[in-house]
Length: 451
Image 1 (tube, rainbow, N blue to C red):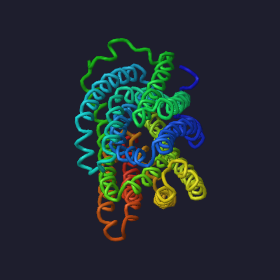
Image 2 (cartoon, rainbow, N blue to C red):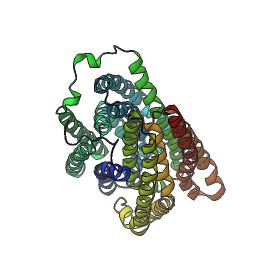
Image 3 (cartoon, rainbow, N blue to C red):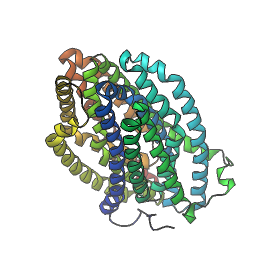
Image 4 (tube, helix red, strand yellow):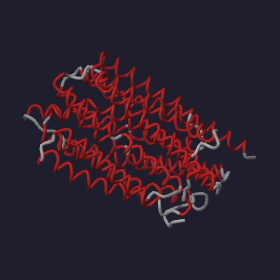
């Protein structure tokens, strides 16, 4: 085994979770950095219209990414459990079968995405002046689905073995690549919004190759052709049943986001641009939450494999404390410095820029104040998933969809445009209530099972 592989079945839970999450957090910061740079380059060099086009494509792009991440995270749950139980041959079979399932899924998603991109954008009433740019961006991003799938699978394999450092290094390399290519493709070569999409995909390819190289050096994961065959038909079915609910959950959440985008599209290009600027900071707001979530899936999965349910309880308590403290720090930073940061994304006439910034900061303030809810959501959902239950998080995803959609449709009617800013917070709240109750039910069930 390499030095980056880590068993989380022994040692102090809080230090294990934080030390695992920290490199993932830094890696996610770099990932968000190149998302932010994409937005900055588009907003500053191509204007408010192009920024709005990027925003119009956001939820459709996020849906595809969410489906991919759902499948690969689900596959990683079984890998973490087998690693914790020291069932290394089973682990190799899971890696091989997951690779085949990922390949088949990526082909299906690529074709489906290309077929549905224009009809969905038109259904969402994307303004005609930004429709073609939004469609072009999606066409390029969807063409790169196999690359995105490859990176997420490889990163999930590494995380399941307790390796949070290699994905960090991959993200640093990808971020640097993306930023350099953004500055070449958009302002220098004049490729417009297509250049921003191409830069992102090339960066993802670089990060995939980086992870693949390091996985190739792990003796534990030396695979042969038999590991890629569906010899035991129950294994691919089990992997699919872990991954599909998570993918479907993310898809449902994205549909809720599209409903929000549908409402936002009716408020005009300036509003869309301001809304988009804050949405691009959404990843920054939850960057630590996502990292703690990955850590909890691995921690919980490994300890479940080792039948250490008391350690799971201790780990969840420790993770909640760390996560809540982190959310307060991020919220304070955004409330204090948010206007300055948002100003980096927005250009146009002084009136346009001022209006877009006012919209963006109000939305950012609402989300920042409620950030502890989002962090609780990530910890509890990931703990439940790590214990092999992906159906209850799916139920929470449905609740999230309902709360987001209902708030987006009805609240603006009651209090005006600003009502749309509360859709996200209401979605977090609905999901969190279900997840907290579900966590206690699942951990109790596991304790009774292992008695």
